[in-house]
Length: 397
Ligand SMILES: [Zn+2]
View 1 (cartoon, rainbow, N blue to C red):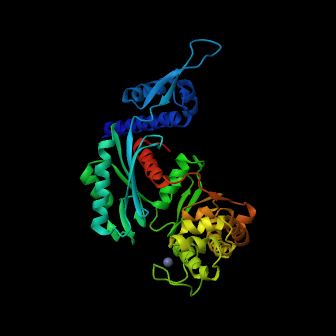
View 2: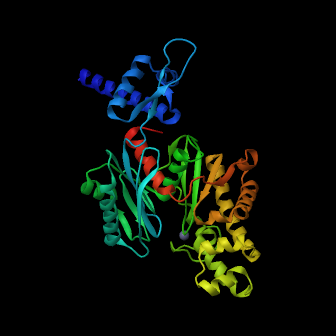
View 3: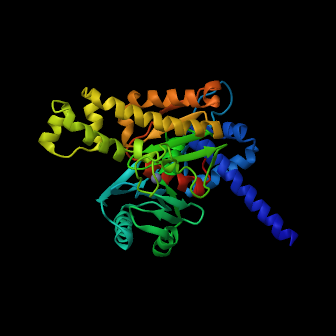
């Protein structure tokens, strides 16, 4: 029994050491064995042994040497970024996107399928069709499939508890995909995916305390505290916090939720109500030509000088700021990032958010949090799904 547990411990230590070495290479390549030993506190023998295995597995490669004053110049080691592939899916928008990505999150192949109105089994069949089409593009060992999906998700079991638009309730998506493809499957919601992407591929690498808030048709937050993703049921569902007593009816059935003021849907709706009063505005003229008013056209109209939109965006910012002030007070988070379709409003949206956080939070007054937009753009959810695979399958991050 003791021998078994010792063996298990040895295996765990070996795995831990391998992850430390790979992470050093990932973060600091090209790097010498001696520098890896110094950073990881592992012995030179252990580092050389692990690197030998990584070279054999094709994950690392020797990339030349650097000259030093004395002795034999040390050989540097780098990552073979194309040594493994992942399939990442973004099911959170009205176009499903899927891609084959490498270890650096570079998109090697991608495809998209219109998903507006897709629900239930039909939506699931579309997911299968996307993966089926991506698999032949994979020409390296596949780490697995990562999925960024909308709604409330049980990350641990890969179950989508509630995704209203897709009509998925308690759908065991990880199990369904694992059965069909026999691969490791990981699922997070779109907010958590955005956070992981920014923390691993964006400008907030290795930031242990981070909140990323997606503001699009819905509003939700991905939360990371002390380097741990907060996975509790429904954590970060800030879009349905009441911000206006007896306010407008929300899609959740309640009244006056944050989403009724600050979501792209709410902003577009308010714009449509005001538009007839501004017949000479840029947006009115554009709407006359092209018909539909959507969030992209509202963003463009503000940039083109339609000042009647400022109060709508300011009100959205104030409502967001009020909720963010609570987050800052509860978590003490120093970094808050926004992503999603409304980020195009830029400072017009950020200023009222910052002002409200200052006004409503003592923590925010004492240590002003950094509130900004994410550094990544359109592929952020696929990148987050990729990050999840690198974290779980390779122990990176
Ligand atoms: Zn609601």
